[in-house]
Image (cartoon, rainbow, N blue to C red; front, side, top):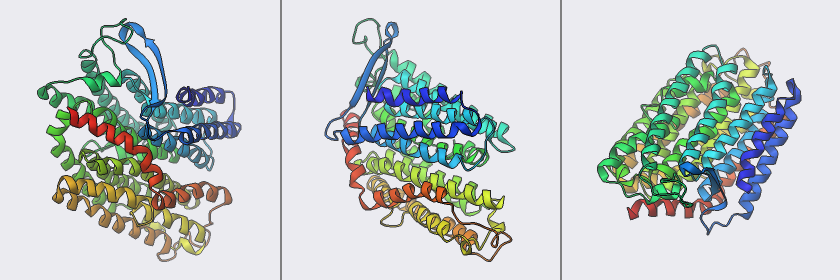
Length: 489
């Protein structure tokens, strides 16, 4: 029942928030998110890494169709549930830095989205997975569309169009797989949509080749992978900072998780056939995202393209089909979530103080803000994968996995570390250490509340970097099970 409680608690809190007006909604929203974090931490402490699915719950949701409300967690699911529960309170605290119209609705949507995200990471039934996938989309559409920037309507519509079309392709793939399954466990339906039933299917190679693209379409858009990425930079830039943090810190992990949980084991022959193409697209995304980031003058847009580049490496690691590559993707999802949320918060803090995100207009900020400078530098070094930081562990494992698959691809993918250092360190130098700007004299350092928000992120930068086994041990069994499902068929 713990997984069900993790799902239902944010929904209940979101419904109650409608009774709070204005700033009064802040404390109950944060309180609800902290309770969710405690529940996720309890799940982590009681989790047995030597067993597979735990905290399972099954309910005959639509018995006549063989569809179940089936949820549970293995190590991979738990990592992402922890990431979600950890980041949502931080994102809410970041939102407190600004005033939003109808704050009760704003924070309710954040909590409602948290349910969709955790539902995606814990669903053990294909149609429940699809349902939660769409549940997570609805709140972010309104968060970006109502509280976003000047071009929010056009940008949000493009994002919604991309994601909904991709989702419909995935639904079509799931419907086809559903009709290939046998009767439900209770015998009430001729077919069922359980994850285990999808894993047990033995479809012809020709079928898997086209089915691969139906399922992969939704994941390709959500991550995103080149060339399905065009919605991402605009949406990240126009969305309010908390929505951008949700999109980059947690939501894009839905696509990577979906590939690992639903794509590789269900259509392994299709994956094998298209593996090279996906790896090439991922590596193009790595280089393309980095090169475009070098040319950006908007801090937030630069971080968006940086995220695209880093996600490309995670996709390449997953499709290397190596244990070390999948392990690297698992821990890099955590590291990227921590780093990118911190980076977007820093960008928002600078914009709130200066009214601009234009790199050319900034400079010399470190003179008045040494604490901000240190926090910014730590998060930036984690992003560029400096040894002993969180980004190094994941990127090293990912590159080793890609190199194990193909040495040339591994070498090209490794360019991301060099290019990442170029655009991020240059941005830091110009914004924080460059010649004094018109904002230097009046710029203020981090407040105590802002520092308290960044400290947990910085702790994780070093915790994951120095003690990666804490997290790799959780996902190891899940990764091996996924690879075993791929190999045996």
